[in-house]
Structures are given as C-alpha cells and as structure tokens.
Image (cartoon, rainbow, N blue to C red; front, side, top):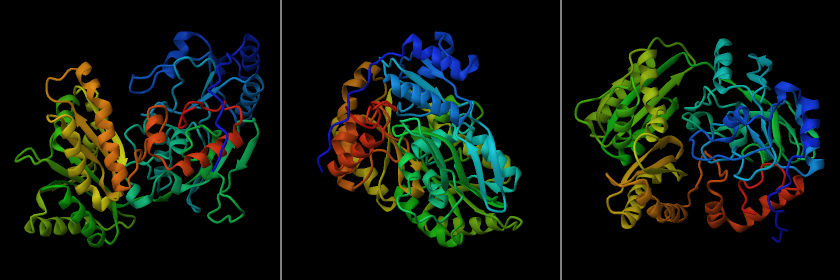
Length: 486
C-alpha cells in the first residue's frame, strides 16, 4: 500500500487573535494562559515529560469543543486533547516546542443518563472513572474498568487509550463495553454515534476508530457505557506459588472450578512487592513467612448472594492445589477491608517503582499460556546485555499482559543505567516479535514508543493507519507527533 506521508508536526503559533476568539467562546474559566495555571496540564503524571502550550482550553460542552476545533483548524494550530493526564506514554503531554492548544476535558463531567434496566450509562468524557464506578454501584451495577489511577483518570482518556486494567480477562478491555460515542472531528464537525445499541450492522463501526486512537483522529465528548450486575459474593485470595508455570496451570483450572467466575488474576514478583512494602505506608505483607519469588492475587465473583459459597469453593480449590504442589501458601480475604488491602498492594506498584532506583517497565502482551517461557527467554536475553540486572515481571496474568519490570543492578546510577536502556529495550522487543506479542498491551504508544512501533509494526498496518489519519486529519493538527513518526 502506497500512502502519502503525513504532514510534519505543525509549528504555527496560536496568535493573539486566535486566543481572543477562544476566550470569547470559552470565557474566563474555559481558557488558561497564565504559566502557573497551565503548569499541571503540561507535565505528565510521572513528572518525566514537560511540554509547552500557548493556552489550555477547558470546554464545558460539545459545542465548545467543536467551536474551538474549528477555530484552530482555520488557523492551522495544533491541538493536544487531554483527559485526567494520568497516561504513561506521553500521549496527553504536549511536545517540547508545541505552540498550540491543550484541550482539557475535565469540565465536561455530566451524567446524561443511567439505565439500570438496560445496563447502560451515558456520560460526558470528562467524568472521573471512580465517580462512574460509584454511580454504577449506587444502582446495584458494576462498571468493571479498574485502574490504579481511577481516582483521577477520565472515561474519555480511558476510551482514547483503550485502557485495560485488572478485570480484562472476564469483562474485556474498554473497547468491549462501549456501545456508542460522540466525537468532534478534526474539521470541527460533530459525529453523533451516541447510541445504546448492541447491534448496528450499517457499515463500518466508526466508534472503534476513535477508541484507542489517543486523540489523533478526534476528541471523544460523550459515550454510552455498558454496565454489569454488581457482584454479591466475592472471594479474593493472596497466593504464594512456585513459579509462573504454576500460575498458568492454576488459572486454567480456576476457570472450571469457579464455574467461569474468575474476574482477576494478577501475577506479582517479590522484587516489586519488597519495594511496595518499603515505600508505600500502610501496606503489609499478607504472607510474611517463607517468601517466594512469585505470587498471585486472584478474585472470583458472582452476582448471586451465596453467603460465602464462593470463598468456600476457592478454599477447596486452593487446598487441592497445595496438595499437588502448585500453591505453597495462601490466604483468602475474610472481609471487604482485607480484600481492599490486598488490592492496594497490587495497585501501589507504580507508586513504589518511582522511589526504588533506576529501572524500566515494558507494557507487553503474549499469549497467556506462553508467559512462563517468555519470562525465561526475555530475562536471559536481557541478562546477556547486563548480567546483574534484576527482572521483576508482574501484571495481568489472565489476559497475557505483563508489566515486565527491570531494576538496575544494585548501586548503579541513573547515568550508567541510561547507557544500557536502549539495548535492554531491543532485547525485550525482539523477543516479543519472536513470540508474536505486542509492545503495548494497554498503555498505548503516545510519544514514548513512536520508534518502537515504527520498527516492529507490520508495514501494511502502519500504511493503513496513516491513510485513515490523513483522511480525517489532513493538516495533522489533532495530537500530532503521537503514534506516528512524522
């Protein structure tokens, strides 16, 4: 496929006339230009990337978004859409010499409709994920998307990155529970695809173009989200296992033993856990005696109130697995507070990692049954680059998504570590290529993985994506410099 290259990243600055027009459209609350007001929107959550912008627009309605996009399109000024600014790949951070506008969707946080009978919610894209989780719960329903950043990430950002989380193996990722979206296109036109239909076979399913597109094809302004029955009987276990192969077998058997009720299965590594217990206040090791290298956090749940039947079934299952040597030790949460404590440990890995010295993490996926072999082979390949490196794989075991962490050798400085990082990345990603895996399972590409995507992706796929981008955004104004190298 021959596709004309995308235009270069626009450098046209936002003129005083454009800023005045945006102010007239959005008002004092809707346009920030003072450096101290813009600062939180220009740096990523990790504090590693900082960009620039002429202004931060904060629209309050779809019409506001459409109006500002039309103004920017007419002026040839680039736009960086932003949700809760919790991404890890720089997708919502303006580049270093960005002269355009950041569009923060936080003011568009209205609940449009909740339909418990039809199991849907219709919401604006700036709604905080945790707010929507609590809203669903208040109607005896479940929004299963669960992330460490759920208290600050927005549903629009979740859609734009096709967020995953801890319950993908049972409910699917974000793409699988979006019924409809409303989107402002790069032209400023509004596409109203806001339908609560489970069947609509009228040509291309356009919503899937924008889910996972990281704001490069338009700005999602509203969405219809599927919800599920709220679990009534939940069993959560912290399990000490022998190795990742035991984890694969245990999960395979758990699907049958639970009657297909496994909702989460998280693999954890002792190196990462030690960092959590060291750096995150209030975290306590659930199994402090006889530590192993690998652990699982497994959860089973049912929408039927069974008075603890799920925990009893899990206990029987784990006891049998222990007799067969798959499980070394285990504890089942006795109440909701203890279950939340288990999950707090799991969700604190990213926070702890920021305090635990040089290292890097790869958001990768392979077929779940091949995870043990991949861990062995990729670790060996990386040790060939740096013998004393400390592999610490962990992540969503059930759906094949590992956050493949590597800690620098003890005592190594950041400066020394940087000399090895590219070779480590190449070793991991070459192994992923050989395993038919993905270099980004749930975090997206953003600006951080541009080169890796260009290096490993199928050329026909890249050409097709560029053709779509060029067709919808011929000026390359919508989040330029993300996903595509230009």
